[in-house]
Structures are given as C-alpha cells and as structure tokens.
Length: 159
Length: 371
Image 1: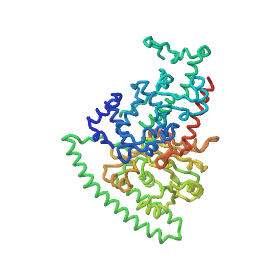
Image 2: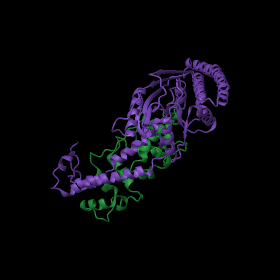
Image 3: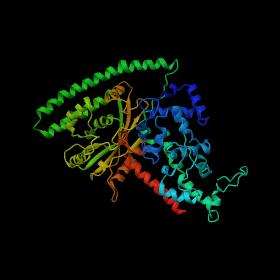
C-alpha cells in the first residue's frame, strides 16, 4: 500500500484533476488514491457497498443508504468527482446539486414528497407556497438552499 | 457573515440575511422558505458521511505504516544489502538454533514433569510455570527482544486481574517471560492452537470464540471462577479484543471490569525503529509475522506496570474501563478512539443507523417546531 502512488502515473493524476475542474491539488489526489486503495481491499478498481460499510463512521450515518446508491461501484475518477463537491473551493450550486441528487432517489430529476419525510414536508411545503402535488426541480433547490451559511466542506488529509 | 452584494440586481426576498431573519412577522414567505431550507439542508450529515469516506479514525487504528525506504542511493544500498545478508544469513539461522535449543530443553523438562508429577499438583504447577517463563524467554531471545520493564513486578494475589493494550500475540510472550500469567485468548487454528491446548493449559487459560454470541456468558462465568480461585495464576486480559497498531487504543470491553476485583493496568509500547511489531491479522498469518520478527534486527519495547485501580463508588464498569484505558493510553502515548474493536470483524448493526436516523428526524422536527 505504501507504493500506491507508483501505480498512479502523472498522466492519471492530471486526467483526474481535469475531470474535477482542478478542485483538488495533485497531492490531495494521491492521498485520495491511497484512501481508495485502502477501502478497495480486493483491488477490483472500485469500492463495493460492503467495503464502504466497513467504515463504522459511515455505516452509522443516517444518510448512508442513500449515499451508497450514489457511490457503490464508482471507479477512482468518479470517486474523486463525487468528493469534489465537498471541496472548500467547490461552488455553492455544485454542493446543492449533490444534496439534490441525494434526495432524488429515483433519478428522475425531480424530488417529490415520496423522496422526503412526509408529514413534516406537507406542512412546510404548503407554507412556502408549494402544493402537495408539486415537485421540486434543481432550480427550486438552488433558490431554497443557496445562502452563505451552507457549509459542506471536507478536508483531505495530506501526509 | 457576508452582506448581500449589490451586484445581484434582483431584490432578494428569497435569500434573507441572518440579520433580517430575527423579527420574522413582517415577511411570511421568506420565513417559510427558511423552514423549508432547514428541512432540506442535510449538509452537516452529508459532510460527516463524506468525511468518513475520506478518512476515518477506525481504519487508521489498523493501518501498518511501512517505514520510509532509506536505501535508495548508491552508498546506502550496498549497506542495506549487507544488512539483509547479516539478518537472513547470520542472525536468522542463529536465532532458529537458539529457539530449537530452547524447545528441546523445554520439552525434555516439561513432559516428564507433566506426566510424572501427576500426584504432586503444587510442585508440578510451580515447575510448569517456571518452564513456561523459560520458553517465553527463549522466544524473546529469538527476536533479540530488548524489553525494559518499569514498575513493580506483578504478584499472584487473589481478586486481581491484569489488563494491557494489544498489538500482537507477542505481547503475551513478552509479559509471560516475566510472570506466568493465565490468559484469555481467542482459539487459533494450526500450531498455535496446538500450543494453546497443551502447554498453555498448564498455566490456566480460558478460551473463547469471537463469533459465538452465547460464548460471552460462559466466558464471563469462567473469568469469575478463575479470579476467585486462590492458587490460580494471575489473569491477563487484553480488553481491546483485537490487535491494534500501537498508535491507538480502541474501546475496552467491560468484561474484565465487572468482576469486582482490582484491575492492574499494563502499558506496552513498541519502538518502531527496528521493527513494526503490529500483527495485522488480516494481512499475515502468525507464522509469517514471527518469521518477519526473526529476520529483523531487534524487537524493542517498554512495559510499564501501572498502579492497581479499583472501581470508584458510583462508577459503572464501562466508565471504569474507559478510565483505565485512559491511564494506559497516556503512559504508552497512544490516542484513544471511540470504536469497538470487534467492528473489524462485523458491520455495525442496522439498529445503530436506524436509531441515528430517528434522532436525525426528531432533531429536524424539533428545529422546525421551535420557529
């Protein structure tokens, strides 16, 4: 595992960096690759749901099932793209888009009542001017959530 | 908290400032949008989940950090090669000889003592104890073990148990060469299991099987019986339940702390300069681990026998366990993490996640009701 960076060439690092719009530094990508290899114990090139669940902090998170649907089977490039939304330099719309995707569990581009907790939602949506049968699109999410107080940043440890 | 910039031309009833938020009666719509925001804003929980994916304290406990390669230039490389020749060509055979010699002496004394002194239990036990200490010393010599013991030597008194942090099975050997402890161990397969069922029986050992849930009550009973027996060897327990990499300690199981006896903590710290003594049981068998130790320069470690602790009035066994873990971690310079070592072998039960989800839903509801 210590020689993980030797299996990742400079070309690979730059390729991944380009795909995440240069949000991660090259050192962070190497760190993430080491982490990826650590989680992907059988070296398949992707991390299975079971391997994600072997991290107790992740398994006990209330959102773990929803997130698993999004991260299960991702290869390293897509893994980095997923995590790039948590980079402090990522734009607010990018972070909000991730939140939207977590809610939109059937991937139809719309978040309906079925996707969120029902009783509370009915009450709150009505007050905010949305009817029970309306669905929220990404733009609605941006309107609702985009404010400076939204904090969704994760730091990558670089040894 | 940044103010709305004047560059945004649309007047923002949709994005009120926090300062505007306080007297809420005037503008109903943004207030309601705020409630919807609170409902939909899962960013703290999402951040925690992503943080766990990127780095988590549990996996760090079992990571063996390979040392930086230092032999990479033309002067040091031949030196390293010479070192390899010395280690594998001279030290290793020498050590194997010492170990074989030790085993011959041990077996030639142990077998007669065990068979012939069947009637004289006290004498037999004393001799067997001394012999086990002897073979452990031979083992330690076979890795050129340099062990520094600090603190008063343990003595055999009733109603006391010894607890220590766990890095490898050699912890047991290192401690056993000084005092013949009885120990509670996971039953292993292969030659280790054979040793466990024959020789270790004589010092009094308790076996358990991690994967059997019912085992726990049987083991608890056996522990209690052993501790109360007057002439049993002092009992050594590794409450972490698994091997950790000697930089962290995981949560102690409370079994050792609810026996109503004095707990004597022992802290063990290995010096990684010569060899990393962490036995990563997922990556290596014990045989491979031992061979790795025998082909290294030395195993250097410090053992501290710390002050015996009793449960304070009003303290629960779990609090007691955590307090002792703190004492050991401070002495050995280890960081404490709040995880159960058995999570190495099994997933956290869905009950944990469901209860967290319940709390999460309740906290959202509570926040909305407050507004």
